[in-house]
Image 1 (cartoon, helix red, strand yellow):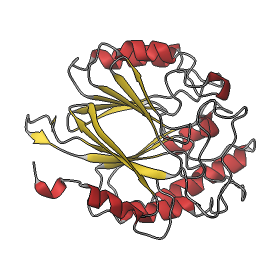
Image 2: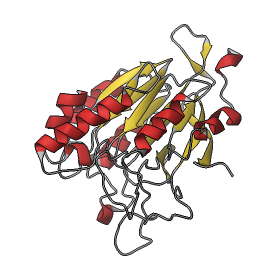
Image 3: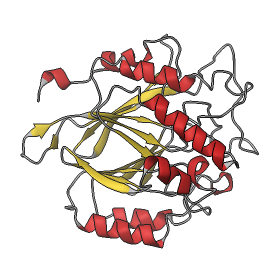
Length: 300
């Protein structure tokens, strides 16, 4: 393994280096993933989620129009560059006006062009896709579900938001079954999605209608990790051996599942302006989650 690619905690702490930008990034570090050549290879990627570009709510985040830009500056300041970045949904904030939806997606794309990385992947959230079954999203970002392989790790991006009922749907499940049949059982698999694939809090729309069918298809594979967004906070859950890990948001935190009668954004606290926002590092060995460390946005 080339030492220059190693990513230690000091490197990750540098992600908070510019101003007080509210950054969330999940770094997936795979020090023992084998590439096609059979040699040891390592890499990490960043996950950003729930940017909600176009959101306006001074009581929730008076800096909502600059947070994404600050996040990009902060990510670009990393001393070790990620191999790629993935946005796990709710790129933009919902609007009933199709023209405004186009405008927000155009603005979002223009802003994220500033990321100093070779590859950026996108997934839709319900704010991006549920009102038109992903039609406008596809015009701007392409497919809503896809696969790719990076240095021996199989990534599967699923769409559980374009269906207004919050389902993956029979057609995509059939596609997933076909894609999984091409993968060796022992291969490391990372699933990327927006909503949780399990029933975290169905009354709050924190579930996927047919998520159990997806999990059942994944169960025969021993090295599976699921990264998702949607709930604007850290949450860890396991279905059998499969770890499900949620991402914090870049715009506002949400309350813990069932902790309050009604789901609503946590109000902005000027004394702790970035409480509930942050980033984490994740280390993996051949698809199995190792150490997961959360860091605050602002250094103590």
